[in-house]
Amino acid sequence: QVQLVESGGGLVQPGGSLNLSCAASGSIFSIYPMGWYRQAPGKQRELVAVKTDIGSTNYADSVKGRFTISRDNAKKTVYLQMNSLKFEDTAAYYCFVDMSAVPGQRRVYWGQGTQVTVSS
Image (cartoon, rainbow, N blue to C red; front, side):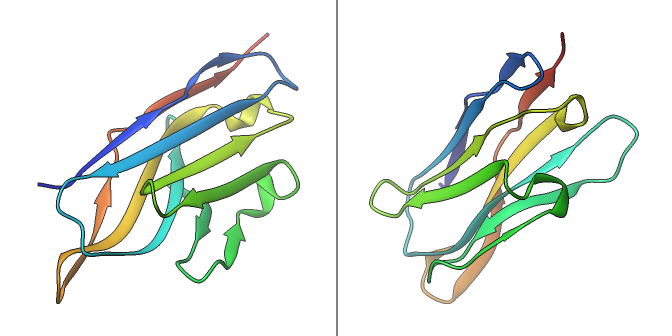
């Protein structure tokens, strides 16, 4: 049984920082891209950042230069360092991991979501 556990969300003032983490556990054969989506109330889910298993990264234009995604393959964990947070970054953040629990069975797993609220 694969499980993703997120942590690190919370309330922060504009200009502040947060570091999200998402750890995968369970029977895992291979891990491919890992990343983060977010969804604000009344808005569509948005890809925030993704990091592939070969190290390439992609960011939403709205977070470039402020957010940094990283991953620790040994710990099966993906991180999102968020700096210079803005009101519009307020959302529920969901991690995802594209992985194979067993050979030949590849799918995307999702975290439970963690709330990030930017408020003064």
